[in-house]
Length: 309
Picture 1 (cartoon, rainbow, N blue to C red):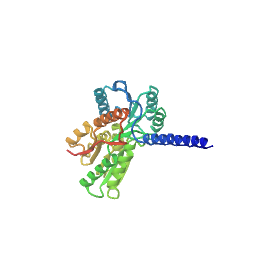
Picture 2: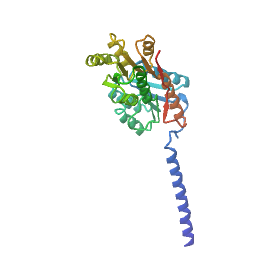
Picture 3: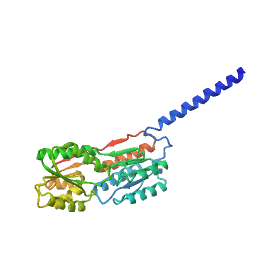
């Protein structure tokens, strides 16, 4: 009987030890590190889905991605969603079917992309988001500027130039994009109760659509003094629509080459400049680190700068 008891005790201790090892492994998988066997860079394929390459900002992100991929001898497969969330979902599914090692996505719509992120999670393909996040699904890392802070910078600049009670309008981006929500949130934080917010309407981050929206806005509100545009493409469309109202302050967001030139030419009052090429570089560098089993940050900030001259 003593011998049986001794054997049972030994088995119990062994079982407890195995359970403890299992729990420790689960804890380690909760952080943003990869425990799979690292590949040589030349064996890595990264799938990339960008919201649109019809916007210079995202072309610069692509440049950054390709530059680091070439330097590090990593293969990238890049697709252009053309601002179509359904098209982007299909492209993401194709990349998952190709069994890429990692996905970098710049969502058209943060909610619409979520099922694709979840599909990637189910296929054990890690996902890194650039500029805009996903509303659900597991993202290894988000590489983006602080959009809330950028919106706040734009609001504070308008307040500094025009003071309180100025009549201000806003051109919003794609309704489902996280950057739209965050830039609007920051702008509201800076100006809430301090300006006469006369109008806000989406122009979907598009220059030609913004021109049309701005023409209608100024007809309905001829006393507008300033416009906050949530990206530079819309800001450039707005200044075309306001060509005969050069006294109206227009502030953009992104810091594209065309926008910076418009600031220097005195057509655009300011732009909250991001560094899109740097975002692309950071995304690929983060991907390689993760695939090599290194820990990466959940949020990687790209710097902002207010350009006024």
